[in-house]
Length: 357
Ligand code: ADP
Image (cartoon, rainbow, N blue to C red; front, side):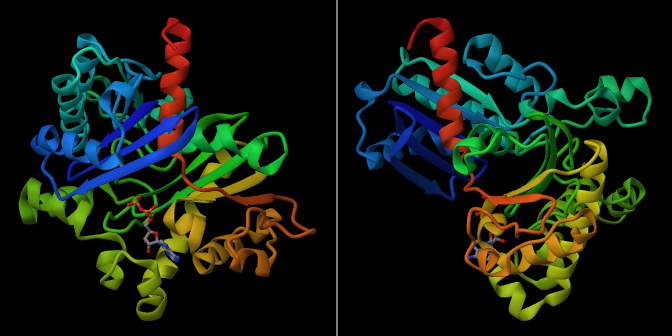
């Protein structure tokens, strides 16, 4: 069995997989990054799975930077690489490292593996990854990375099995949850994505602003200090700022402007993604909003009608797998986000390559 550890900035999520199937899960909410060491044994006990039954532990790591772009065994060098990316993901990477140390303290001989949320976008061309800023700033790490990569990789891996069809050549993937992004996937590889240097860029999100002019960021920093501006942009913006909640179910009743803003910018950014891959063959929705919110999905799909997108309204209302109608030039699918299963699969692949499976 493989234990998947998602050690976040304020929560610890565990899932256990046997032969690619989930057999248990547990979660501890509201812990600080340095609390993972205490939380891990408790959460593991909750899964009912004994340490001795585990073949490996696989971690979700938010930021792998330019160096860590494939799943790998956790070694001292890999941990140093993850630590080097702490300035790029100051809340997440320390928590991921703490999760690894917590496992090592509990079971020093248990092999650990890491999968990176940034890795899927390593295939983006240089023109997409580069900001037009001086070379020294680029070399200091100020470039686009992209996120939600494990969700997109899981979607690419799982879609043909779910639809019974080959992977569409030009696929627009929409991960719409509290964090939200789009990805242009050409022949199975990411060629563009809406998040950039950090998960702030792109779409309007639960509490993040999405795309905003850099000079507006500087002005906010002038007015509120750097930490204050960071808090405004990451925690007080997005749907929370526009509608007083990050829950779409509430916003549909109370804040139509917030919903309209979310859908409008999803469509605007979709246009950019579609241009980056030279057209559109299929759309896939995932994440809490993407899987469940037929009203928001319908607004986004209406905005893409000019691309030949046409959906079946009853299928959409039922959150069905296939949403396209007979006239649609573009296939439309929904899939459940499956990052954790994908992380377990990636660890198994590394183990198979190492000969340790
Ligand atoms: P996270 O990014 O934190 O993992 P989720 O993928 O769980 O977030 O998505 C959270 C979002 O999904 C929230 O905006 C929530 O309102 C929305 N959502 C979840 N279920 C539904 C539903 N049944 N109808 C509409 N929106 C939903």
